[in-house]
Image (tube, rainbow, N blue to C red; front, side, top):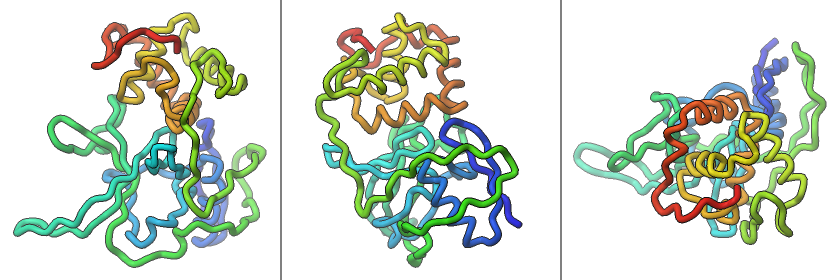
Length: 273
């Protein structure tokens, strides 16, 4: 009997049994659609064949792919947003590399050193996955196969409705995102949920500047108002704040007052966040 240890989207650890290697993959696919994941992202990211990139099932690593209204392809995974980037083939006397597609994000202060990769200048980034060379593996492709839940060695969390796996990237409308506090494009439940999450991890709901600075540091850009925040970013932060890592990052932010006094370049005003 094989055992898979999953971390749920709420940070709980659940062990599930599988009878074969094939079932392991299908269980990763099924529970990954709920945002659960097993294992950690390796240094340099997961490596898959380039031919699998177009229809890769991101549920296998606990993620899902969306396309913003601006046309950017993004994978929401484990509380972060990873952008799709195409890398041209390189052929020099010292280096030969085939073309590739990479999903990566800017490095955060809390990222461990072994995940950080250097780019031009002082820029650092973290890679979720890279697709390069190799031969296509059909087991990585999107699938609608159903798997009967295996026995769990821990109390099992009732399954919620799985996110449908689309045949192409889901398009999300990022226009008119209302400020936190209510608005026609923001559901009251979403407002209450984010406010509750911020309060649970230690934010004073009257601390507008603190929340604003924290979100700016998380996103790596300035926000004049929450309307500047993309829906994909909102969803990513909502998931991240529920995790143990997210709560730890907030606590670290709240115990270091110095970063909260500064503002990112281009920050024009202290808006209500």
